[in-house]
Length: 601
Ligand SMILES: Cc1cc2nc3c(=O)[nH]c(=O)nc-3n(C[C@H](O)[C@H](O)[C@H](O)COP(=O)(O)OP(=O)(O)OC[C@H]3O[C@@H](n4cnc5c(N)ncnc54)[C@H](O)[C@@H]3O)c2cc1C
Image 1 (cartoon, rainbow, N blue to C red):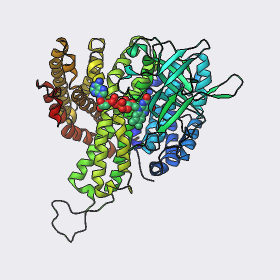
Image 2 (cartoon, helix red, strand yellow; image 1 turned 90 degrees about the horizontal axis):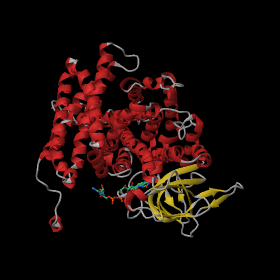
Image 3 (tube, rainbow, N blue to C red; image 1 turned 135 degrees about the vertical axis):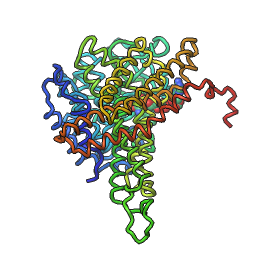
Image 4 (cartoon, rainbow, N blue to C red; image 1 turned 45 degrees about the vertical axis):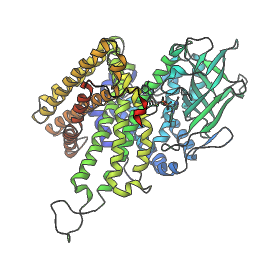
């Protein structure tokens, strides 16, 4: 079977770079140890090998389609995967014991989901959505809502979805108009249209639980007037029957990627009979939803990293088998052609992919660990982990999505013409990956969040924590002769970022917020290059320790040498882009506020 991820690399991340064992000191995770953790993760590989990866291409060729009668037909394997994943606790495994879960840390749960994402990313989407929806209900729903809706989701019988987007309200959720009219019977009457709803009314499950944002009549305008509702397709009645809840699926969008993943248009209350059940308090819906969205943003970033990893593995395999031409120094045409992996330019493309995919995955694991620490700790410690996670969340969503697309494009390039054909998976991975920079908040929106909110949050405390964490890694690397130059380089880049922020702050202080934020995406790019450099330096620190201690129990010497090599590659070929971003950010001219739109023509 073709390789779609590296279990060696996953092990390195979970046990050596971001050692999971510190989690086992906390009450929440004390029932686990390293051995169990790996056994659980490995069991996911079996499911992915047998049930997901073999269907990856076939599912692309038989996309989800609207049946014309309010439903969406999916590939039959989707139903089977949801059932098997539920049986093996891959929907509810991270939930607390009291909610029927195994109280797994995200480091384990999301390692398994990384395997699913790299094997067959669309199918993982169905599972992840259910996990996130149930998590939202257990966090903010009442006991009856938890008892009614969570078990069937964890059992894979019902699908959870998140229904936010409307035709006129995508990035700007303050503009949603779906309405909720209070009744005196314990529910609200819902009316409205939601579009692009992933995992919507398909034939792989019996029922749907749409976690929906709507506006209670008379609520304040903007985000302060948004409430969260549970809106099932079929409502369970006291007599055990199921009542159709007037949630009609009006269509399924056909897409360039993730084609087997249903993307639906839902219409609520066409017959004035759609009941929504308020979650938590009125007008707090967006705050609640952000819990799901923050988890989903880490998951989307991790998914992008995983798809880039699958593309890297596919192109690596091809390069090890494809003979073509001779190396630049070999002039004798009678000599047999060399494998393309021996061409410097091919190695450059492979190493770029490796640097992006593995760097991204390491950042995702850093965030998974912070997420676990937030959930396991209390008080000041919890606040610290949360702030660091908050500033990293837009970055972990964005860098893998944007640079992962570039990596997958390089995977196609590495294969030459074959990469463009459907004979090889790299084009599908490239198409699948594109959505990651769009849903869960586009790159533009994530960048506004980073510069506009996260950098300034708590008087810059989150940024200080991030800088301290990076400096800790730098200080360690400085003690090693081979890593010192890279450590110094990253130090310099951090100082340049501080200069950029000082420069931008001038606009913020003057109240020129639009100017302050106008190059937020360029700032995101710069910050991302630095954060991934931090991850590579961290990985190199660990690899160096292993080599010096001649400790090759987990991975080989070449594996560790490869990590140090890729760190050097990243610092030589990728990190210099940060300086170009800094130059643009410091430049005082404003070129992105054209008032005369005719100049675009
Ligand atoms: C396949 C797919 C699955 C999806 N799944 C779900 C789902 O399950 N649930 C759900 O609720 N939604 C879902 N979505 C919707 C998705 O989250 C939105 O498409 C996304 O948030 C962008 O909204 P939009 O498409 O309306 O684009 P717009 O908001 O119109 O954005 C268009 C462009 O304008 C930019 N832009 C917009 N506002 C600003 C601003 N203030 N400043 C700077 N730039 C700005 C954006 O960055 C983007 O480049 C899905 C979408 C797709 C395509």
